[in-house]
Length: 418
Length: 151
Image (cartoon, rainbow over the protein chains, first blue to last red):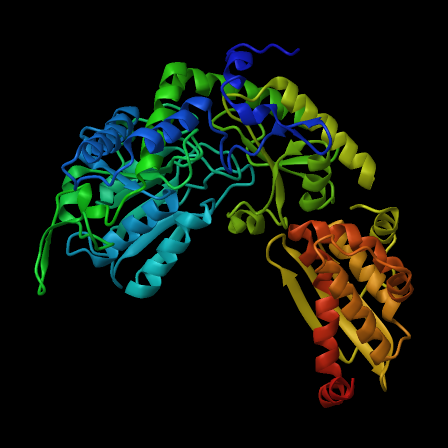
């Protein structure tokens, strides 16, 4: 078996993930390489979910009975865990949402309804990039259409990186918000946060970072990032679906208006008007995803026990190996950086003129799960003149042997359609 | 799913390329980005030609090739029957075992039976057939409507 420096003890880790033992298509071993879409969940998270429902289930922040108090403590305890995980200065800066898309939509709507100096209107500009997931494009298109603001974006270089050569023309005095992805879900690119933030700060623009593909894979420190908002989702980092996070700087959360109204987000309500609870509750209308937050807390405990720096080193070693092995496959073209430098463990590629849906289907017949299509980042496919890509993405339980299986599988695909 | 017949049509497509036609349509399958531009040419109600150009997966491309092979030279009523039978097969979710009568109607297109088990791929197989139906409606206009009422 291939041994690479920096790898985690995957044999031990994989015992925590029951699904990885599954066989598919008449006894083929599952090779799960679709981690950028969603990660698998360890037994510890599954247990936390069932334990919550079996012992503590109640609505939070209202009842005075034992279960309500315990459920509230668990839910708020999960907020503490998230705050510590991302080095937030205050737990009150952590808002629970249902996913990263909701987090990004929340920011766009806060700014759309805000007063000066935050308000986005027809005299101002919004900046994104061409490598964003649709969830960091469409909310800003909606905001631009509704307010008359101008939407601008950074283009991409041929090797899959942001083209920042015209940064001073893209981010200007008119820019109110710059929203960009930390690690691209389709290209794998890790973006140069500092350069962008420095320019945004020069012109007084707010910065929102989509960390959906970063939070699961590397240490995340919102203070070091110096952004104003950071969004990510739980299900890509060993947690359940239905729970996302928006971190925002405290003074912004105090100043900006709520988006969804309802129970839990208020202070007092009369038939004429209402006053709002302080953040984060101001942004959490209605019964929140309680069990899911508890599950995310358990996922964070799990990741912390392994160590995010070790997860990063593991995936970097795998990415180096994967880039090398994929480079040996004839007619394979990596879409995105072709080395492991400043690159995450999601690798998109095309294989000759074989359509990615055919690649994915034949790999699936061999038990290998990859993602095919435009990965909710269609502008990237348009930029590189391709209809779609096949994407393999790794996580803390992925192994070099699985990369070997992928490469063998791709040889089979080539023979099949050759 | 990938029957030999399908791979044959994918590798050696029938009637590919755009030629003269009475109407042209462009259809896309947004889930995987398959695209087809398709033209139909009629001589009365006889299909003189179905020409096409497109890009996409083997299923969508092979299906267009089979369509060309099956429909060119047929009368509209017969072509409709083939199209409807193919649609029925593709919407069967793998529960329909094609019988001899169906095989007589569908010929090579019966090889797509296995595709109907894969919901994500059914649209690929139907892309050219929906495009043909659309182009025919445009080419024949009122004539096609009259045909439908008497059918």
